[in-house]
Image (tube, rainbow, N blue to C red; front, side, top):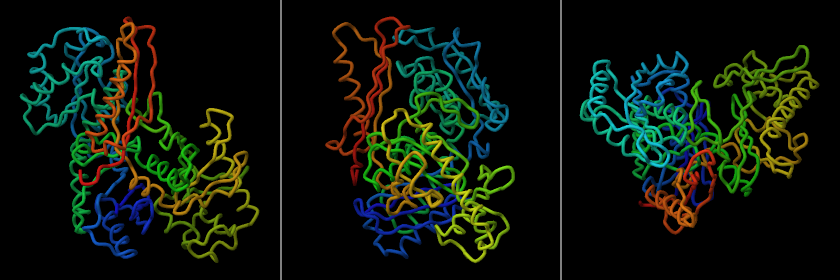
Length: 516
């Protein structure tokens, strides 16, 4: 059996699963520290369905800790950004487009050095090792504890980033974490560099959080491997999570969408995940979330690592309801203070949860406390919620073809059984813990995203090479070899580059090899 845990901003959800069957499911309030909420969730599972810890084969966890830490600008390591590209790229140095608040939060220092490649592997300039040692000495003098190294077109050729990493490690010692951009982002230099700097700034925090997660799970006698879910719905082990915390940023909505696919049996659909503060809408294609194809802005910083294409609106169970010049719901919310501030719990704030209870759609808290709410106000507030969510779904559609809609998350009780213009809403069993289920059933993946210089008559060989490398990466990450299949493949010629340049992106996934 497996345990899936999703640590959200308001609740920590957990499920115990045997195959695709949910044996137990619990919700606990998320704690400020790493461990308490997870400990409570595991206690809840044990109380609901007693199990032998030795029977647990794997524990999958999705967490918002890292993106929350970045957005709030706390617990980030002093970080240096070292770019290899001179004499090119000097006009836009590292950290140039970062908000001043975030530069201060990471105590950011930037360095430019010679190096880098053209897309076809030719050098822009030779690596200057003395220059790199001088930069490392300056980093040491300023207390840098984590370093992000990026090189022009490093996804094509990694040699300079690798060598620079060795030199920086020699100068600064093994205690300094080093992140390399070709392991994190895609082709675009500035966005890849930004993603790498973010990853570097989170490395210290990642170590503490991963240790906390392991302590929480092991404290219950569970010795099974622990995995963290990634933005694309696949898994990584704890060692990988220590090195690449940025890969967990959007695991929450991704887990919800993957869980919705399993619960509803629909591989292609729109998924609405309604929580305490926001409703997140994404599109599932072949059972996996559609990924954002353009840059993704996180905490005001442009990045290009893998993220699901999700559109959020400020509507959730804790959203404030106001009347005056028309009724409004959200975007402000009482969030995790719902049980203190909502009317149904004896508070003084009119929330979306209150109007749902007043309308008789749900039994939460004390219904007698909302009997004074005008039925017409409750009806108009719920119509407002339905119309706003339907509008977000419409904006995510890319064709006029009918698109089933699946609602998950504890706040999905806000939605009617039929959305305006969308038809019937699918609300599967265990919808409230779809995110934890999505974590529990996550698979293992491998991806290739590279520009190939394809010679005449060699196109098929290049495609086969990319597909095989993606499969090999999935197997190396822990996938059962016989279950691995290519689920995404893009091939885009780049006419403005010479040599019949073609960008090939290939992703393969497979089931987790138990006992690996």
